[in-house]
Amino acid sequence: MKTTLSFNNSISLFKFYLEKRNTTFTAALKNLAQEAIYKTVDLEELRIKIIELHTDLENNAYNPISELKKAAASDPVLVEYFEKNPNPQKINSTVAYSISAEQKPSPFISDNKKLSELRRSTIDYYQLAHRVIKILEILPELDKIKCKPITAVRNHLIQHPEGRASLVTLDSFGYSTEEGPIVKALREGSEIGAHPDKGFSSNNNSMVNSLEKVLSKKNI
Image 1: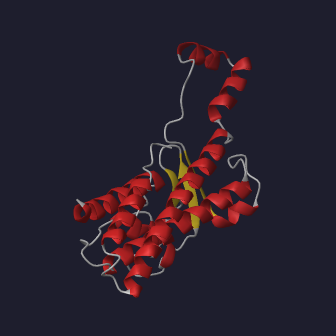
Image 2 (image 1 turned 90 degrees about the horizontal axis):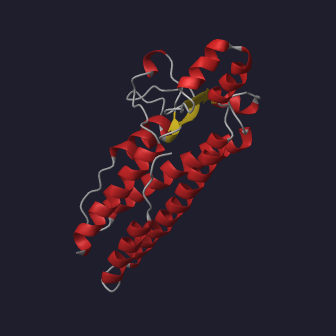
């Protein structure tokens, strides 16, 4: 997976924001600010967990290049190909499946339990991120946070897929080499163009950048 930004700086900025207003905030506002801090800590822990699960699945996934190299032992065309291209690489290879497939063995899924854990952790991540966004809309002296990738995935693909603005009802999941987990990675018919998930890495970085932009502005 490509680089995913850490929430550690956002956590520090949140704490500084609360410290500066500790004597003026009501108990309710203090509680909300503390909740935002704790949930951002949870986001960082989930980010690390998702990366680890994705890395493990990628390292043990079905590798067509390995299979081709085995076949080259009896295929002169493949022998010639690998002589010219000794180290071909997978580029943003993607696994996509309906959720029911988690219960079935597949040569393309190296570990069904870890894949299920990756999916659940990804869903938890988007729910937590959405909650942090909603809290920031309530806390005073902060500009409104804008993070469309997180909002779109959470609202249209996870929480309300049956809504008119979405209608992406095929319950599916997947991951790519570069972007990591992808919600509703498998589409059919009219679902194909509706709110495509760019992937965890891009969405995580958008969330981190949005948080830091909003929190840094008031803390300078």
